[in-house]
Length: 308
Image (cartoon, rainbow, N blue to C red; front, top):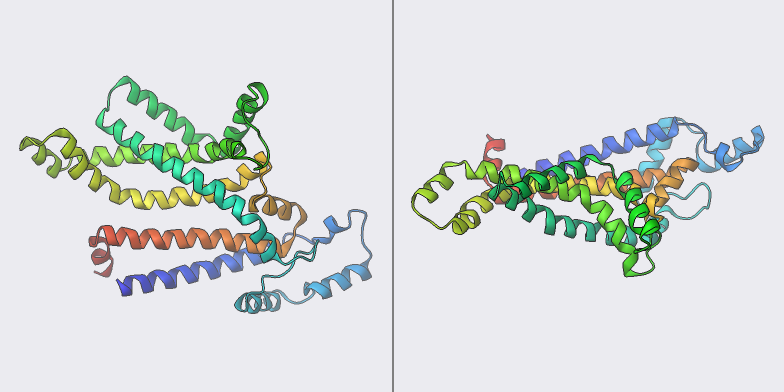
């Protein structure tokens, strides 16, 4: 296990370094940020002074090396527009993002996994076909389309729920549902496929031939074996949830880190964008690392196959 974890950590570090380099290069060659800071224009002398202040007059590799040195000591830079420390900006908004994301994840697990399992056990029924049709639609529709639809339906026409901010518990309902719907659909579809595959395996057929109760077969033999491959899919769905939170926060005007990223893209605020890319990429890499470890713990054969 130690060897497996060591290789995974090295791969994670290499991935993060590559993400850092690509993000840094993309932002540096995307244009000057001063066009947004001074929409009516800026003199050559003033622009040169600003470039010297922020180190933008240095060669690319010198800028990148300076940025890595800053990261090594926990200095993530400051916003070009406000001068505020980037870490402080994200720390202030992170609780809202984590609250909405955590609630959406719990809702998706509570609904998606049982829905997929029941669809497999009652396959062919009219309700099962309808549920899978809705799940397919929910997985295909983007977050922002779902969000706008819920705002129009429950916010504008029915006036049942608030549509912006997070002032009260009721404000969480629409953003959480919007973020959870694609994940519910994805988990339900995969859980159904995993259950059907487990039902067709020899151990399930043998258990049925021995006269075991259908409920015991489903609980002990089918569900347990179907949950193992679900671990990896759950990691992918969480990564998708992280990406979807950016759109959901923009649609519902939530005070989360997604709003910071959207504003930073518009303003070309290099330090703010770079930290956002690092944070989101780091979360995805960390989730994948945890998923790999859980998968090996659940099925040690995976580690043996990779070591071989």
